[in-house]
Image (cartoon, rainbow, N blue to C red; front, side, top):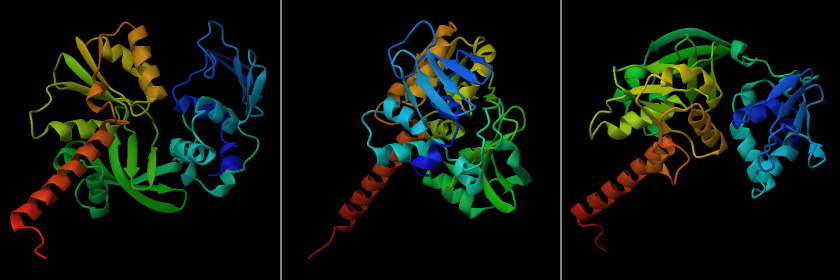
Length: 313
C-alpha cells in the first residue's frame, strides 16, 4: 500500500497495533494519552473515527495516519515508514483493492471485521503439505516441535483457496501463517499451554513460542507453562491466568507494543522477569533463532571446506 492507501486505514487500528489503547470513548471520538509527547495525566489526544483524523490539543496539531506515523518514528524516511506500516497491516493487504477505498471509514469494532471473511475448509496434521513445512523451516522452526502444536489449515478468503500453518487458541480460532500471509480466524483469543508448572513463559505469537522450544530442544526441555497472546491487544485476557504463577518470564518484542505490554503486567502487580535480554540485539525470539541457524550454517560450511582441504589452485 502507498501513503494514500495507508491514510484510508483507521488510525485507531494503527494505534492498537502498536499497543496504544484509548483512555475512553465518547461518540465518534476516542481519547488517548498522547503517544507523541511526554506522558501526561489527562488524555488530550483525540481521534475522530467519523473522518479518520487525529488531533493533539497540547500541540494544536493533527492530521492523517501517515502524519501520525512520522511523529512516532521521526528517524525513519518516508520509504522505510511505508514499509513499516505495510508490515503492520499485513492482513489488510490480502483484501481486494475496493476495500481500501470504501467510504465512509467505519469505527473500529471489538472483533476485526476481516476475521469473519476467512472460512476454514479443512484441518490436517502437519507434514502433509511440503510448502507449509518449507515455510516453517525458513523460520528455523524444528518440524518435530511444530507438529506437536500446529496443524495444516486449508481456508477460503472470499472466492480463493489458501493454506497455512495454523495454531489454535483457547476459543477454537486459529492463527494462520505462511510466506505471504499473517492473519487469524474468528474468534480471536489467547492460547494457554499448561504443564503443571509454577512458572510461565509469555510470548506474543506462536512463532516465538515454537522458536523458544526449538532453541531449547537440543539443550534441555523447558519445564514451564506457556501463554501465547496471539496479539498484544489480548494482554488483558491473560491477567487472571498469570496471577496464579510464582514466576512470569516475558519474551516480548523489542518495540513500543512489547514495552507497553510489559508495563501493563508490572502495573497489575505481576511478578515478571524480562527474559528478552537473551535476544537483546534482535526484534524477537524468532529473529534471534533465524540468526543463530544462519551462523551455524556458515560454521558447518567452513568446517566442510576445511575437512576437504578447500580449493587447491
